[in-house]
Every structure is written in structure tokens, then in C-alpha cells.
Image 1 (cartoon, rainbow, N blue to C red):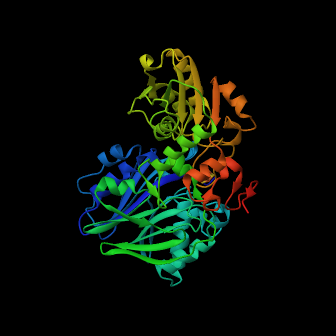
Image 2: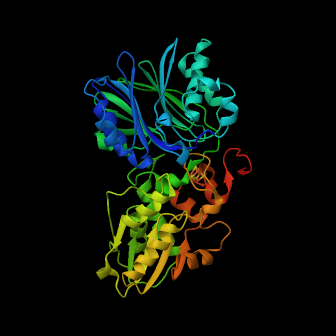
Length: 456
Ligand code: SF4
């Protein structure tokens, strides 16, 4: 079965070696995937190194003889549990008579069944849709098309979300789906250019963010610049609202909007929609911090660091298996009893998925002496799976499926509970409903998904 994955991608072309740049940029994108990491560098041929685990451990295995070329792409990945194998780590590599191809993909192809019929399945070396996309591009080039036309032709067939960096020998390309579901940004160094899922990767490297790759745009990249080969966007866009709420780093600027600002505004909006008398506002660290600060500023209730986070435990949402997830929730944060004892506490989180973490948080706050616990959530209830690039649970696993907010409050054990509304979320992002994907919160998807409703 094809895998539904979400990841981080990067592509760098400079006049100097890109090996260290790829490592640093992938570390900056580590939150987008912790299961595997990989790079391909052109050095007369495509040298690829991939491994399971964090970027730091994968790069520690690279031999001193590894390529020191000036053009390369990289990838970090998470997937469904069954797909967490080295076979599916990226970049995907393809050797043909026309040369070597490598591709790194963030997103999910919705019409994967159809596109798999276009390739010889026996030749596939992974279970990913990404390899199928690369093979289709290669097939088109074998008919005499140049790379840009082959990519454009392939994009006309693909349905779903994709932000991709790709190399054909020493030439690099990047392209983004016409709805612009997943982010992709371009930036520059003094001696080269970078494409990455988030602008944060550029900041870390000392590169300057230049612009977003537009929905539907194809670009080629070399040490002299980023060249656009046209944009085939649809009128409607569908940027993933969850990137702003949770998935991207708070310092990422995506399609002109800083994730931190959205989260801060959502905190203020939460106060407007769900005010409560309380003594202290705290965050579920770290992803709830900007929301909690917004709530505190709007309400004049002081903000305190009520939880101290163990920074050496990964994000619970993207751990592939439930047993690991439960363990990491236990380890990951500790309440500061002296700040909470006898207090009416507002605790703000970015989102609630299964509810396990929220239940645990409320119970730990009560153990720490909180007199009241008021739970506020910066994302409307998640009630439907994501088919477009974020590996979410099934409907049955969401705590909000088929329940009123009051039921969820009782289930997690809080004194009150409030989610931001969908209209409040859209206002805080500031793009308008027609520019966003809201599939997992309103059950209407921007592309046809079998068994689900299509947004008109
Ligand atoms: S369904 Fe939700 S998580 Fe998936 S792309 Fe749409 S908004 Fe993002």
C-alpha cells in the first residue's frame, strides 16, 4: 500500500561544497520528520546517503570520502508505522540512460493508484508515491521532453500535495502543487541559492529568504539564481492551515505569513471566544507558547512557564507508534508546582488530536495543586483524517469525533474547555477561506478523496 507521508525538503546550489549546508538545513527542518534523513550530492554522479533516525545520527555515519559537490538535495521524513524503513527513506534515486535523477518530496499524492498504473511496479525500489512521480518524469524525458516540460506534464496528472526538490545529473529543479498545500521557499547566499520547506532553514544557514515558490510554479536552481519556468496555479489555493497551527516552526514565514504571528493572534482570539476568570495562563510547551502569550496579553492574566519541558524527548505527534507516544508524553514535561498550587490555571495548547496528552496534562496540573484547570485550544476540533501530507490518526482515534465540546471536557477532566472557531482560525491566518485547506476540521477537502466531500 502506498505510504502517506509528510516531510521536509531542501535543495542547495553554491560555488562551494553543500555537504555541511545540507546537514544544517535538515537539522533546522528536523521537526518535519524524525524517522529518516537523507541527502544526494552531485559529484560527477549522484552520491546518496540515507539512514534511519535523526539527522545528527544519520550524518555521523557519513564517511570522510563522501561527496563534496556543489549541488545537492536533502530530506527528512516521517510516515505511517508500517512504512518506517530505510527502503522508503529519501531522496529517491533513479538511474537511466539519460543520466541520474534524485527526488525529495513533501506531501501526499491522492491519485496514487492511477499514477502507479503508469509505471512498471516491478521496477519500484520503494513503496512511496515519490518514486512513482520521479519515474513518470523520467519516462517523459525519454520521449524527448526537456526536464521542465516533463515536470509540467507530470504535474498535470498529479492530484494531491507536493513540494519537491529534484536533481537530474547536476541540474536542480523544484516545484509545488497548484493548490500550494505544502510550503516551499527560496533564498540566497552570497555564492548560491537554496530551496527549502521552511524559511527557518535559511535563517539557520545565514542565507536570506527571498520568496515563496508559488503554487503551481516550476523553478530551476543553480549557483547563479532561481529561474521560474511559469506558474500553473488554480484560482483556489489550499494552504494547509495545520502548518500555521502546529507543523511548521514558529519562526517560519509561509506564503507571506509568519507562523508565530498566527499562533499569537489565535491566542488572542481564544480569549475573545472563551474568556474565563483565572490567576495564571500557561502553555503546553513549546508549541502552545505563542498561543498562551496571546491569551495572556488579551486577557491581562499573567503568563508563567507552568511546565518545564525535557528538550531531549521528541514531539509526541510524530512518533510512529502508539506505545512510544505514550511514553514520550510521560517524559516530556513537568509542572512547576510552586507556580500552580492553589491557582486557577488556563492551559493553552495548539491542537488536540487523540486527547491522551490533554488528559495527562490536566491530571498533572491537578497533582501540582491547581485549583481549577481551563483548557484552551488554538485549532478547531480535528475530526477528519488528513490525506494531503500529515499522517493523522483515523476518525475513531480523534477525541473530538462525534462529540460535543462538553463531552471532550469531561473526558480530559478539565473545568472548562474552549476551541477556537473555524472562522476565528481563518481570520487569524488572514488569507481567506478560499486560500486554505481546512479538510481535517470541516471534512471538505480541496481535491477529490474517495469517500470524502469535495470543497466546492
Ligand atoms: S487536511 Fe488538515 S492537516 Fe491535511 S492538509 Fe488539510 S489542513 Fe493540513
